[in-house]
Length: 494
Image (cartoon, rainbow, N blue to C red; front, top):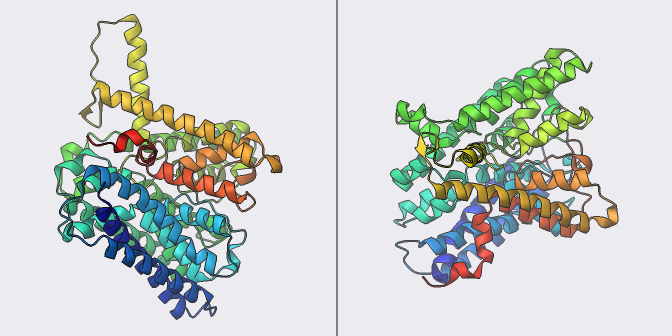
């Protein structure tokens, strides 16, 4: 293991994080609405601590880096998210009304992993500079802070293919056929373009500049942090509340699709674009789910079809995209709707998007593989050709997908048990443990039970906060990039 490479690259990553903190501190200094300067002090001090730590690592790793080997790349990706989470917690610890260090780590992990769960009881007590930092951490984590970092390193002449491949948000075939730097830069241009368009649209719809920026950051990142306790429900009673919801729904859906689709559009590869199945599956599931819930609730006497469709469409897209914005309390919906919602939470968005979850593409591969195996049991000599997004899948790819699904469900089951043990003194129920575990691994945010859409995670024990923070990072990196850090056999010389 080349520790100089690890130190230098991780140090540069912390320097990048410190610049983000300084930008929020500068906003807090210039903010004329919020006269409390505690956020400015907390953000500048946090930035200085992060900058000092990053600078020290850069000095310790002083050496010219020509290439980052695969093994070091895996460690950098895993430790990069962990260090970003730890140092990102500092503003919440240093700024009144203060969070405990375990709650602060949870809040930071929820930001960088774009989960959207919160350990803050009342957001109105916090300065706007800190609320901006919450939103910015999600925006950085959305497209993957390491993807931005890869673009920067590539300009410094460092080979970063191993980093790009292990940054799980963008494991896609197109990335391997284009220059990594150009692909990373194009992804960031698309991300910036979507953010700016969403921001300007929200401003036109009547939101303040601060609210427009905060919600654009977290909608495009499919993160779900809002500066209001009521989330998007804060605007539901506005005359144009429906249009605000529809605008945000549009961007939650767009950012749940594979970003490499937009790269294909810019490169005018229309034939390749027609092969993309994940997007059709994701949008189809959202439409069917919203209609089914709306019709079921309408026939159940909950209200008019228009009202029910408005509520169900926003909730379904918000949870299926792993954003977690809220407008309605879906816990008061019928039990069958709860099951429907949980089934939507697990697959999440498309591979190569800012969304979390198992990814709809893996679910498609799993279902088709299962179907083929069932048929093969009766027709053993029949030859199958399995393709997804126009690409043939061999037996190894199918096996890896099946293994991932098995790991995913096993981690959810085990985490439900662990959470029940950690929160035994609070007599926590099974629904809360299971839903919270699904929410954390899938990076969704709100769940059911004691952590439902009108609740938060502040009442949980500190140990539980740390465990759930680990689950969020595990889900953000799609299991293997973190799990491999704990397998000694992977680090032996080969």
